[in-house]
Length: 393
Image (tube, rainbow, N blue to C red; front, side, top):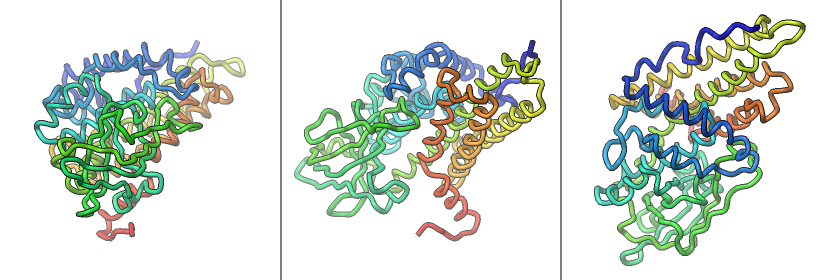
């Protein structure tokens, strides 16, 4: 019989940094992912559908917009919010991404950029997850360079704004109740934020098909054809792309935590497999090469989690800079890519069977590696901080 593991994937016991209430909530999130999500997620991943019937259960956890205060949000620390993202990613990266879009990008934008009236109008229902949010920034021809190349336009017409353009890769976009849309004012050339309440005339959202990663996330291609938005739905405190960047800085750290969760999920499934697998007449956990793979995976997880924990602490004390968030996201996703590959390697051919879960993490890692800032762009943001010279032209 294989020995039972003596350590968990929280090797340096970072959960001990949380208070008792936060740790209890984290355990509830873990139990929900293990008991409600894991048994069904492969079916949804295969069908490229999101398990929307699980949304009420997610709502009961009270974690939507966790790091923000007021309007129904619990006002927990960024460290807690990050560890929740990690737990969601450990269970399933698609669910983590869904919550990151709703509670991070959409709700985060409203907390940072909406007026008091707008916050009161939208955020409580979003915190209860009665209304689901999406975030429309990326466009068909502009991803990493969207700051300079945004083509979606906004034109003032009396008490309304007319939006025209396209958005691509918009998570939750096909079923969201509220879509934050970033567009360039044709008169001032400023980037402004708007909340489009769906359904709306001229607004259409079609899910992208045949993805090989995050298949349970429904990413939409959105078309805005003369969509009219009242002035009261223009985000009153979003007046330039800098306001968009403030949102992305905060959520980039959460994505880094989600990458750690993806690594943990693959590692834990691989470890569970190894503990029950025998070859050549003995448990494979007794083989040196298997123990080396476990060491490498746990080392990546531990280093990335420690880096993310410090980034979250900087965020909590108002010291987080763009390069801090970029280092966390870029490094954690590189290590994630290695880790999920090693988990698959440990399992041999069985690692590509969806029933063993690791294959899903391997595929999903490819999307996490690229969204919310590619490794290349994040490396250049950090490089600019190191050298004082921007390599982004």
